[in-house]
Structures are given as C-alpha cells and as structure tokens.
Length: 114
Image (cartoon, rainbow, N blue to C red; front, side):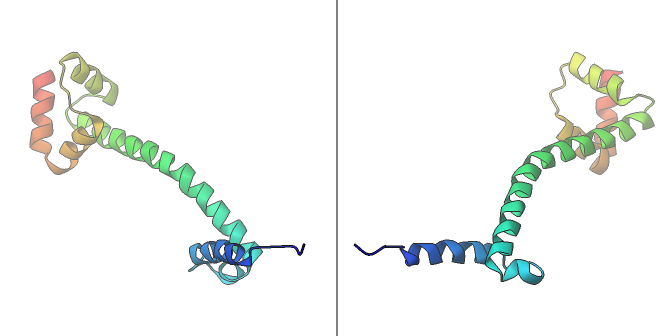
C-alpha cells in the first residue's frame, strides 16, 4: 500500500502558522522553520505577559495611591491599613483612579479614615 501523507492537512497547518507570522521582519515572515520558531516564541511571550500585565497594573496603582497618600501626609502602607480597618471596600484600581482623576474624592476617603 502506498504511503499517505495528507498534504492538505500539512499545508493547512503551515498556512496557519505563516498567517500568524504576517508582519514579522525578514525571514521570520516567509521561511517556514524560522517563522514557526518565531510564532512559538511569540505565543510563549503572549502567555507569560498576560500574567505579567496584572502585576504591572497592580504596581502602577500602588505607585499612584502612594503618591496621592503622601500628599495628605500618609504612606501607602498606613493608608491601606486604615482603609481596611475602616471597612472601606474600594480596591486599588478604584483608589488609583480617584487619586488621578478625582483628587477631591480621594481627599474625602483620606478624611474619612483620619
């Protein structure tokens, strides 16, 4: 019996990878082995960075809250400790947004916990 390779499926697989490599620089966009490696690496970075994005945003919120809290004579840790103690259920995302876009509301939160 002759060997069957199913070239339709093989071609479809390669085509899918080459489509994902569209827009890459140099041989990464049109040479199969290079494109396959580049796409695999890109997928790993994408997976990793979906997790890192959460960390980066949390640290950004902490920096913003810290800066706003220090304007009112408090450190970040003191501020967050008092927020928890007074059962104010605003998360860091909301507090950072208040600190940047609505300083009066942030001051009201600070006055409530002092």
